[in-house]
Image (cartoon, rainbow, N blue to C red; front, side, top):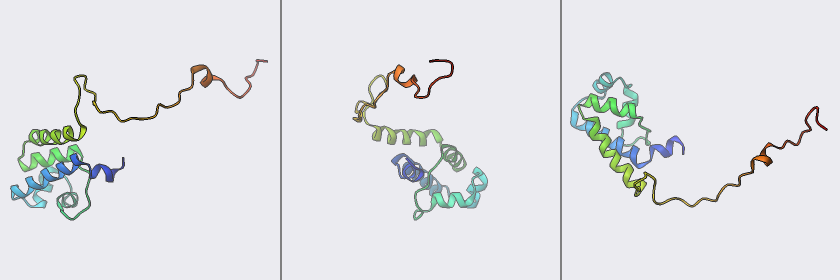
Length: 125
């Protein structure tokens, strides 16, 4: 999965939504937020722009922005956990997904077949 696909993933879209909502409620300017959280203003502008292509949000960026906006990063993490659980599906008590994708079993060579060489070895007849 490439960066564009990750940027469009529901959990990333949720992170962008939280950042945009927090920024709108804060009354801060992009410049003030940039100075406070240490993220370049141009990066923040790309994150905050509703018309820009989806941008991948890194955890460190999200935490810095949350703290700078006065939001509780744990609340944001909890909201994003709900999104992740919703898209992962049910999990059993061992922690494995119940719904497993069907895949063809890869062909595995036996150890002896893997270790045979087609080149003759020196000193052996």
